[in-house]
Amino acid sequence: MSINVTGVFLGMKHDVPIMAEQKNGSIINASSEAGIIGTPGHVLYGASKGAVRIMTKDGAMEYAQADVRVISIHPGYIETAMADYASEQIGRSKEELDKTYLLGRMGKPAKMVLFLACDDSSFSTGAVSN
Image (tube, rainbow, N blue to C red; front, side, top):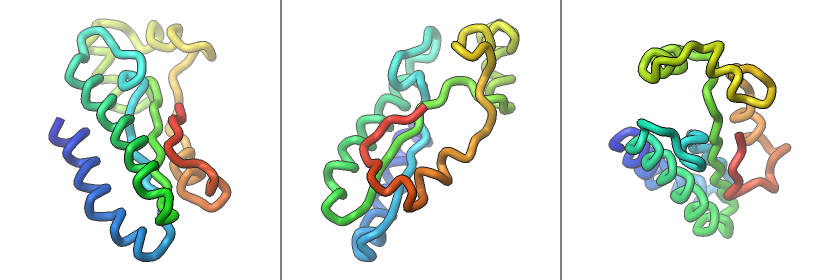
């Protein structure tokens, strides 16, 4: 909770005034699909990521007039060390986790955050992206 909720809150608290003064900026908060649909055995994690989702939407409404965009991303399992750890914790192989996705595989680290931060996505705010 201190990292996922308080960290996001403090980041927005301290960064948004600077961006608002400049009349430009993008905040992209990292949430998770667990913050939307929940995950068995991850009550606190899901709660923290759900809080990120709502803080993002609230922030988007509060800061839109200052031309500050606030967006959250909600990926599922991404091929990272965290996915390895999660696989061990829940007792399911990565291959089993792969099968839970429509494309039959976990995601790969992507450049979505770079896109959301650039001017090409300047009409996006308050959005939830996977």
